Length: 542
Image (cartoon, rainbow, N blue to C red; front, side):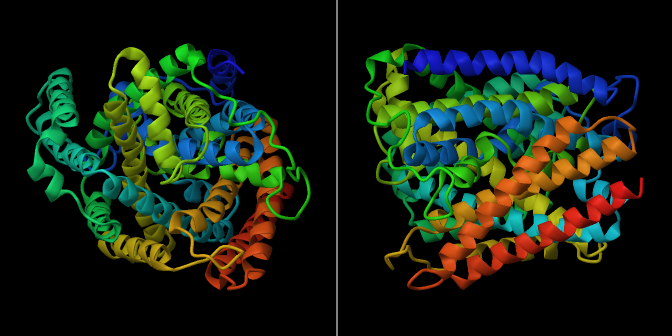
């Protein structure tokens, strides 16, 4: 299929979805700018901090994007064909992921910016909250683990990518100080900082000193990034998290623009190596990797992601300046992510297969070819693609760590301080990264590849449980029909339950069984069942 047709169909559906479905949901929630948001009522300058919609959109989009809309669709399209993967990304983003993200953001905003866990406690009960927190903590540790190893891989693969990534962090701290302490104009700070980063991208490779300084092995980067997320989790949001995500968002927008150009003008590239439908696929069986349910959890963030509800209710809801911003920030960001997933499929089709280095390198290679269409040298384009996906990764990595810290503190009734909670999350994630695992043939496989399927299943299960929680609030609190939330909930619940069953069976059936991952998956399965039971008890009592 023509790249341009794929892109145009996706973009048209997303624009129509935003205008029609976004307006519908705004009416359901009665969004009104006359109502004061938690960012204004509970301002503390650390977590509660009103942000300009452009800044908050950048922060939220950069935080939720991660590697999910790139890695997931690329892996799924290579396994099952590009057409079913593309269709799921479009439908999922518009009718499942978008309502999930916006619902989580609005429900949190209406509950003093508290997390989805607090919403669960209010409308389902304390037992439901404890179950939800245990589930989300495990899921977030998986998120931190898989994004940590992928971030380290991008740094280790190219010293200039590592240099620019570290520069972004330094520029973010300076930007935060300039904007919030010295009241420098946002536009001026943006232009200056982005200019510095742009020069570093182009000229960095000319310095042998920089290349040698940042040429470090994966394991070293794992530990360096672990120290970074320890700091990012506890520093005030205005000092690092918000400005870093805001600055990174421009790189992400650049990546979307180049990707869009590539999709619209890329007909000269051969796309035949990736079939429309993969032959020999087990579509609905329970052996191997059947399309249902595995494609839906492998695509992950490209269609719907429970991680987004934790971002929306964990950090973003505390920064909304007015209620109607929830439409563009919550729903709009998910539709943009769906567009990124479409572009990611295009980069796979251009590359022809998943190249050595995995989906991240595949995306960068395809991006480099797309960039050549606007006169950018393919080598520089590939590097820019790697920097772009690294920006996705780091923003989700530091946000996930902060969210895990929130969840652990909530579970302890705030008896554990933010420093200890952060250490618990990071150490647990590092432990998962360091565990060695094997495939069915007994061959060692990369840590990300072992963790990704359970990350996807856990992530989608969080989405199902968040949809259920928001739906219960809409029914019990707003006294309105919640079918637009409950229908996606049932689909994701059944899908992720089956996926977890397949994963548990597969890990226990290996020549060298992976008891750790099988055990984590089993715990997630049990916690989900117990929470669903609690939720329907609450609805029945209504």
